[in-house]
Amino acid sequence: MAPAELKLLVLSPSIKNWPILMGLGIFLFVTGTVGLVLLIFNMSTALGVSAAGLALTAWPALQAANTEYIITNLRVMIASGVLRKSAVEFRVADIREMRIKTAGLQGPLGIGDIEFVGAGGTFVLEGVDEPEKVRDRVKALI
Image 1: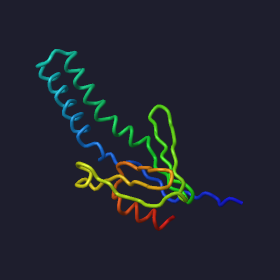
Image 2: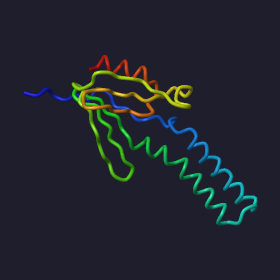
Image 3: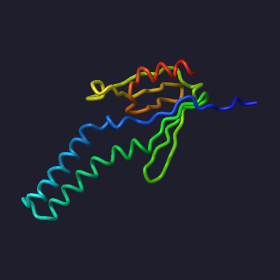
Image 4: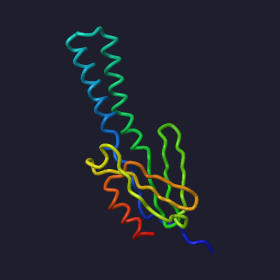
């Protein structure tokens, strides 16, 4: 009889994973809004710049809100998708090593990627808050 699957940990990527994109979005939104208010730009340009800024700011938040990292006693899964959900998984039994990777601003922001290495390849949980603590907790749980 197969062991029952138990959810051990559920995480989402940190919104801090996209600081440059969000900063650019906020800048464009403010620029477009100020331009509209001051009538420096014509109406359509100001609205276009504001809309682009709002979209660039909202997309990372929407992406993070619709991505879930689920760790059970049998699998590590990523369920994601804004318009359509998809899921990928990696068996816990296949995990040989867990690595923390940080790039660019991730280190100073306290986020990083957790890479699971196993016989079947690699599997990455991107933009996790406090990745060392999460890795240690996953090691203790599995």
